[in-house]
Image 1 (cartoon, rainbow, N blue to C red):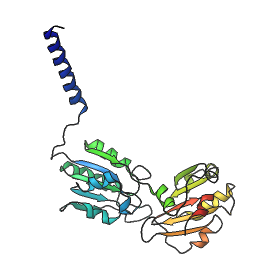
Image 2 (cartoon, one colour):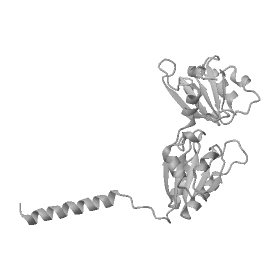
Image 3 (cartoon, one colour):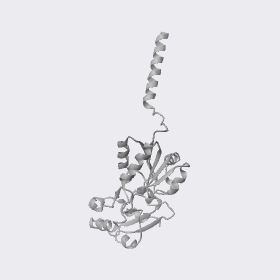
Length: 267
């Protein structure tokens, strides 16, 4: 082959590789470019924070944390990191409005800060993260979503409840029950295992509606409060007894598991 042709081919391949890398390689982030990391902080125990989440917290200039996030996570942050608590829980009068949270995230990002937005569990499982994503997009802010361990699965696991079981639980569903009137209890009654978030305040309605839908009053129910933390508590009963068993107890935050597998909980 002619040497000129070889050179031309070499130059062509080199240019192709250059432009491919330029197209597919992200430019390094400038120190002046802010970013918001929407981090799933897990069910509560700092040891259940993901490695990626931990590494990002260690780089953060600002931490914006939900109320249920373990405060010891802030110990991972570098010196000088600003900690902002923005608690938001259904039913609490002093919960921070979502619009205020959005405003803080955008403002801190616009300042060029690296913001670790810590959300309990997984940010995309009943984490109310979508309004924050919309606000960041509208403001032109960079963000990334870091998955976390959702309490819907980790809380039952913490007390030995298998959400799936060859004989007892062929399928499961995860629902939020702070507005039970919006749920179809007839459909829920067909599922082997029901995992409920934000359902402790409406527990009497839930247990009553499921029995009206045809579930046996003796169906096991487990409530796991503060899963994975030193203050963890577990209540085990049935659809017919669990409300009376927990009368007078402050149960939130807790996960409710309804189904045969709930009887396997370690108390």
